[in-house]
Length: 212
Image (tube, rainbow, N blue to C red; front, top):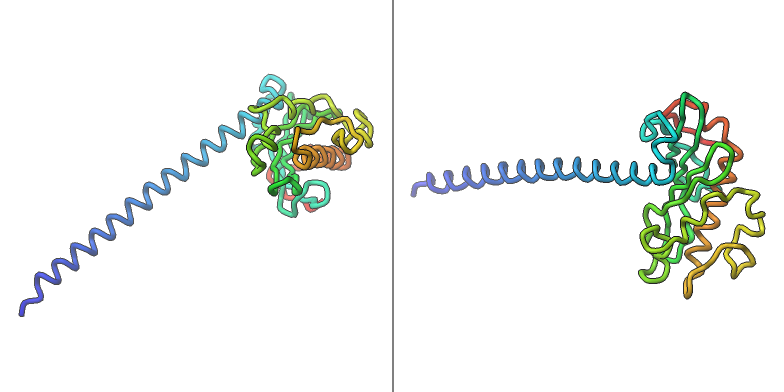
């Protein structure tokens, strides 16, 4: 009995498997790079919505710190802070905290704070809130999130940094209070973090981790 046909078939199967695996790896690598680039462009677009490009002249995407403060930033993980400067002078910092108490889990934010402590704006990066109710926090679905621009720790007062149902000054959505409550709290805490670390945020070198 000749084993030659079996050996030939096995070799062809082996070569087919190697070729297929290589193609899959190539496609995966190419797709991963494209996804990363798309995410970078989306992030840069959000950063420029909050801090328009004409306000700064540095590379905001790479002038970045990673900081940690679970109490004020909503997560024990390292949180990126993007710094905007013009002529070397600080303009604004965009912090990326998490609101951990959304209705359906974490709500990831971008909170842009001018160097004077006033909010340049807030955007939602990622969430899992209920469509038609909690998704009103998205800038594409309502103007609610845009209402943070110009606010600060003193405007409104500490008591005002709540939704109306809790005696504060921020609207809630019909049938959805938990979501806006979580966002308001997270933004307020991000302002507290910025107030306590304003100088060191701009003095530290890019990419330097901090455990403050």
